[in-house]
Structure formats: structure tokens, C-alpha cells
Length: 336
Image (tube, rainbow, N blue to C red; front, side, top):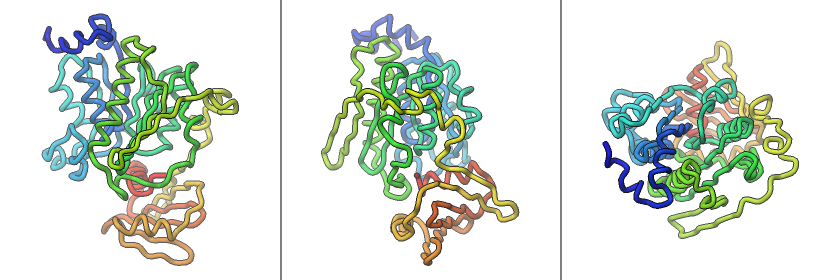
């Protein structure tokens, strides 16, 4: 349709040339939850030529409050998020090639998934995946648009290889507070704000308006009326990703290791972080039936799944031998 992008072309910084650049661009969105669905909607409606969406999970009723692409029918069919996202996005804009990939992103497939992309957008729910993407993007020279949201707080930054520090220079591995949307909640408007910043910086970059990039780590709390901008400084000289080119998350450093416990219908996660079991009982008591002993914390999520947390940082996820399911549960409720 000739007039589909007319209003966007009228915006002088984009114009005809910028719209043409968008149509030739390829974007990878990792995660098809709240952030990912909003980002995908914005990229497809803006006319980005190719949008690849990677997600390992399926749609649940609690997603509909903030994950804008999905419907009650998708929930009833228990559709994978990547499948449903592709289906709905193709109806929005047939000009765009939308590719939904149902997969867990990990160090063995991350390079193939980002190959050929012009930029990678973060729609994930955990820092382990973000640091893996950070390493992969900086190894391949692809910009990485970080974004996160929980409660009423949001944050975002654009990291460009050879031009800015990387995520690891700004956020240290293991610095997460263990807050997730499933334990402390989230309001939908914060998703709109985070993804608006992410999408706008992406459009600036893809249309060649690099002088308009803000170069900030933006953080805000829209409920408590707080907003902070921190200028991205020089990279850390000893950063193993963007300075030493070691890319540890692509190799032997993983903040979590998921191991199937043979014959026990359980998967063990080694977070490598000491755990204060009393604090974790307080966090999980709102979503699980908990039992604390001097040696461990049991948190029964439902009839099928139970967490067992140990002070040394180990977590058993009982009731499954499916690592994809275990990762989904772990990042929803533990979120380190």
C-alpha cells in the first residue's frame, strides 16, 4: 500500500531514504513476552523488512495483561509465543517478512540466530540471556538494544560495538535483585515506555540518524515519578567482552547451569550465588506454599512443580526433566 508509511515518511529525519533503509533492514527480537511483543509490533508497523522473533515459551492467561499481540484464543490453544506472534504480525503488515522461531536461545545457537541481523533487541526476562546476547553481539559487531522492566521501573540502553561500552561495563553479572514480574508484579505502562525508547533508538540507528542517539542508560519509575539518565562512559579497561574480546558467556562462564537429575524427575540449577533462604521465603511466599528448614527452602508452586533452594546457590526444580520448562519456571520466579 503506497500510503502505509506516509506519516512516517513525512517525519523529516526518516523521509523516503530512511523508509527505504528500514525496508532493507533485519531485526532480531529475543523474547516474545511483554517487551518483545511491543517491540515486534512497532518494528513491523514501521516497515522493517525482516523481523525474527525467538522465544521458548507458550502463552498463558496472565500474559494478556501486558503482552499485546496475544488473545484468549491463543491461550486456549496453548500456542507457542513465537508462533502466535508471527501469525498476528503477518496480518498487520504483509510487506514484512516475519519469522517466529520456537527455541531456547543458548550459547550453541546464539551466533546462528543473530547472523545477518542489523540490530538485536532485548525482550528477555533474565540477565544470563542478556549477557550471552551482549557477548554474541560484540563478537559479531552488531548493536544490542538492552531493555528491562519490573514493578513500575524500567531501563534501557543501546550498546554499539567499537563505539560504546557494552552491557557488562554497565551492569555486573550477578547484580540482579531476584525480582521478577511473577513475584513482585508489573504494570503495563512501564512496558510502553521502555519499548518506546528501545524502538526509537532502533529507528534512529537503522535510518542513519546516529547523531540523534541519546547515548544514555535510562532508568525510570513511572509510579514514583523518578527518572535518571546516566551517560555511557568509556568501557572498563578490563572488560572481558568489549576490551579483551574473551566473550565469557559464549564459552565457559554461565551464571546458571541446568542439569537433569537422572531418575529423579528434577533439574538442578547452579546459580553460583549464595542464597539467604529467609529472604527467598519472603519473596516466594506470595506465589508458592513454602517450608523453611535450617538446611533448605521448599516452595511448592502447584501440584506438579516445586522449588528446593539451598544456601550454596543450588536450586532443584522438581516435577520436570524438560530443561526448557525448567528455565521458564526458574526465570519467572527466581530471576537471578
